[in-house]
Image (cartoon, rainbow, N blue to C red; front, side, top):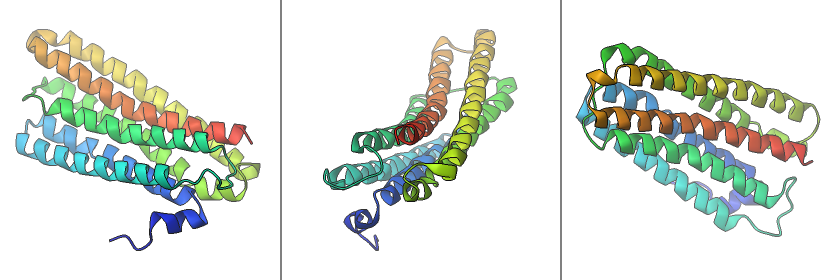
Length: 226
């Protein structure tokens, strides 16, 4: 049950709903850990259950996104451009969408993966979630940034956080490329369909971190435009 309407929140600040939306998107991304655990264990029941959970979280993120779009008054004074704020929300929403895409591909058929690839795949997922956690931390600074009009020492601190997030995403991206190379090195042990689908899974998972980085860089743009 919602204690306050989204209109009440906007009467105070649009950044509270924006933070709530990001939290929901990251909650969705964090389901990647149990999702991959189920997929690697070939536990189809658990995979279906976690896929359903991701779908529910993504739907909840969509509700928040649409509420923000519907209730952000054009006349409301903001320290940032309204269009830039909406683009930030789009980047956040894409985090949840990409996590749902991973689950969708994994649900297409019963996939197997050689055991020697399990540890690096799990490490790849952890690298993605590190990036997402850093994106959550950047989003949590929105209220403070708005109070300082996206300028001053607070803005400088957030810019440093964004730089660190960019480094983390670069690491996860490189690790994802390496995992794909290992996948193709073992393709003789797998069906061609499984190889194709696993590659699609890894690419979609990498997009989760990519959109987390884009969300942070959109925040950088908000600061730069002040």
